[in-house]
Length: 375
Image 1 (cartoon, rainbow, N blue to C red):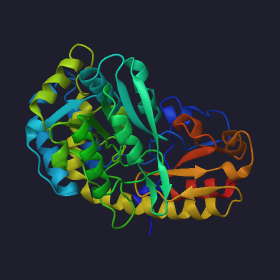
Image 2: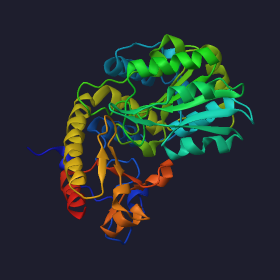
Image 3: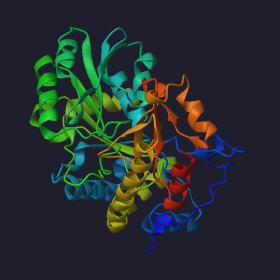
Image 4: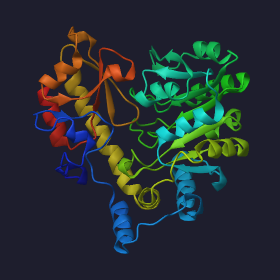
C-alpha cells in the first residue's frame, strides 16, 4: 500500500543545505539528519494560517502557553511522565542549548566529559568555552553500544570536571540507554557533583520494538543537576524553523541558564513555536506511521549493507541514521569509496570515528532502493 512517505519531493538545491552539497553531481545526499519527507499536514496548516495575516512580529516564548501545554502533553504521551510547565525553557536549537549550558555551569579551564563517537557540535563545544574535553569511547558489548562507566567515574572524580554532555539516543550509532544505564550515570553525576546535559533530540524516533527512552529529568538523582534538551525538529522535519526546548527541574539551574543566554541567544522562532505545537497536538498518527516506515527502511538498508563485502551496519534502535563500519573495505578513504558509487554519507571522521560512515535512510523507498543498488 502506498504511503505519503513514498512521495518523491524535488528539493531544489538552492534552498536545501542537504541537497546543495552534491549539486550538479550524480550523488544521492544521505548525510545531514534532515528527512526527505514533508512535515505533517497539521504543521503546514498552522504555518499557512499564521502567514495569512501577513504580520511576522514577535512572539515571546515564555508567554506562549499553548506551546508549553503541548510539550507537557506530548512528554506524558511519549514518555509516561507529566512535568510542571515551569521546567520548560525555550531556545532556538539544541546546539545553542548545550553551549548555553557550558557557559552557565562551567568556567574556562574546567573539564567537559563527552562520549565518542558523537555528534560533531558536541565534540567541538569545549573549544567555544576554553574547556578541556575528556572523551569517553563508547564500548561495543554483546548487547550493543554501552558507556564506559568506569572511565566516566574516573573523569567525574576530577576536581574541575563540572559537566557531561550526553547524547541519548546516541548519534551516530542509534543506541538508546537503558533505564539501568541512565541510573548508573545519574548516580555518578550525583556522587561527584557533575551536571548532566542530555541531548535527547532523537528520543521520539525509536524504531526498535520494545525499546523505550528514559528522559534524564525523570531520574531523582538528576533532578537538581540536569538539563534535558528536546525538540520536534528531527521527529517532524522542521529543523529549519529554529526551535527546541530544555527541561530543567531545578529553579536555580534555570536562572543560571537564562542568565547565560541573555543578550546572546535570540528567542525561539515564532514559526518554530507554532510548528512544534501543531506537531505535538495534531500529528500523532503521522508520527506512528513515520516510525513504521523508518523501521522498514532500516531493514531494507541493513540487508543491502550487510550483503556488501567490507561493510557492516550497526542496527540502530533509534534515529533514521545508519552507522556503517567500512573498515573492512581496506581503503584509505571510505567517504570517497561511497561517493564514487553515487552515495553521499556523513564521514565517520566527523564523529571521531575513522573508517565509518553515517547514512540517512529517511527517504522514500524508491530512493533507498537506488542507494542499495549503488552499494
